[in-house]
Image 1 (cartoon, rainbow, N blue to C red):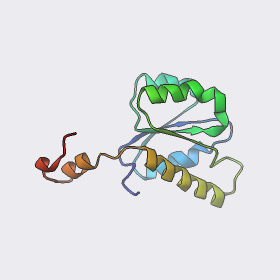
Image 2 (cartoon, rainbow, N blue to C red):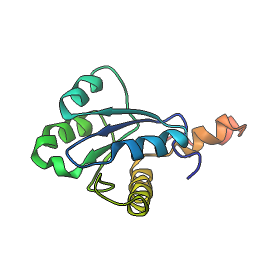
Image 3 (tube, rainbow, N blue to C red):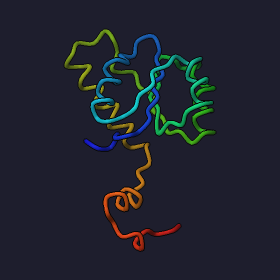
Length: 129
């Protein structure tokens, strides 16, 4: 998963408890470009930027419903998480950060054929669907 987030644009939608700083730091250490926003600002940035994935504070619940609909309309894969949260001890936060990133990896499509080509693969081997 070391290069999974390299050059990916990730939006973190903060709520009342999500430890956004920890998620942001870990994503950036893995090469992601991260924007942290509340729900209102998230709508604004979606009009101007493309995101490869998003993490939403699960505590937002109904407050983020329309935002999730917008993510779907724009084909932005997202996950909703309840951890890491600000009240956890460091070890629990670190575990929940890793769990959140593992879940995010599962929803972000990986363009293997394009990755292979960029890494020196044979253009004739790309399967056009």
